[in-house]
Length: 410
Image (cartoon, rainbow, N blue to C red):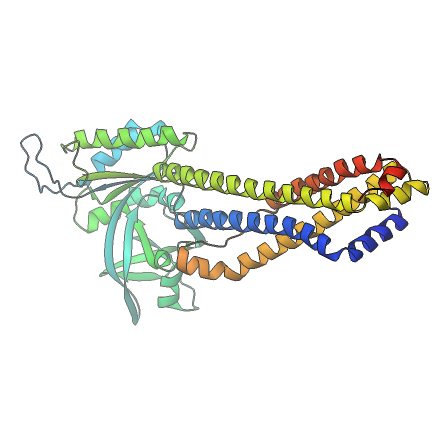
C-alpha cells in the first residue's frame, strides 16, 4: 500500500490519462455534491421548525377560551367563556400524573415607570412553573416562588430589555417599579431566546393580579407541560381527553371549536416528525439513486480503463509482475480518484450551502442549511468501496489473462 514506486506509477497513469481520470472523478464528485445539497436543505427545514418553538417547552399544552358559536343545553351562542381557578385546579387535580409543569396566565398591558422613564409593557400573571414552560433564563435574582403567590406579594420579574429601557447600565434588582400606579419590587431579571418581544414582558404572581385587578378568580389561559414520559400518541390522546372534559364542565357544544381549544405541541411535533420523515425518505431515495448512478458510472469507466490497459498488463506480466501487484495498482488508483473526488464534492456542496444559506432563510424559511459530516462521509465511503469493487473485478480478470493473449488484445 505504501510502495513508493507503485504510487509513482499511479500518478503517472493519472497524469497520462487526464480525461478518463477527470471523468471518473466527476461522476463521484457530482453524486456527493447532490447528496450534500439535498440533505443540507432538508436539515435547514428541520432547523426552521425547531427555531419556531425555541422559546417554549416541547411538551407544552395551552387551554384557550373565547365566545361560543353554537347553542348548547338551552344556552345561547355568543356566550363568553371564562376560565377560573376552579378549572385550573380541576385540570391539575384530575390529570396530575400526566402533567409535569402547570401555570395559569392572566394577560395585562400596563404603563411601567421608574423615576422619569416610562413605557407600556405586556405583564403576565403566572405561577412559578411558568419559568420552565417558557424557558425563561433568570440571570439576576430569582423567579416567582410559591411564597409570592401565598402572600399575594407585589413582586415582579422583568425582561432584559425592560431593564435596559428603564435602568440602562444601572442595577435594577431590588428597585421598585410603578406598575399602573402600584409599587412592585424587582426580584429577578431574565433573558429569553424567543427574541426582543419576549424580553419586554414582566411577570407577577397570579394571585396578586387577581386581588388587585378585579378582585376575582378569573384567569386568561391554562398553560401545561405534559409528562415527558408520555409518547406523542399518548400526549395527543391526553390533550383530546382534556378538551372533551373541559367542554363538558363549561357546557360547551362538543363541536364548538371557537369556544375552547387545546393547542397541543405533541400534535405539532407529531406532524412535523411525519413531514420530516417523508422528506428524509425522499432525499434518501433520490440520494441513493444518485449514488447508484455514481457507482454505475465508476464501474463503466473502470471497465473501459482496464480494457484500454490490457496490453500494458500483458507486458508487466511478461516482465515478471505478479497478478496481485497489477490488481493492487488498479484498485489503489480507483480508490485515490474516488476519495479525492468525494472530498471535492463534499467541500463544494458545503461551500454552496454556506453561500446560499442566508437567501434560503429569507426567501424559503430554510434556516442554516447544513449536513451531518457522518452522513456524507458514510456516502463517500460507499462510493470508495464501490470504486474498489469497480476496479478490482475487471482488474483481476485482466491480470489473469496470459501475457501472449493480453499482448494480442485489440
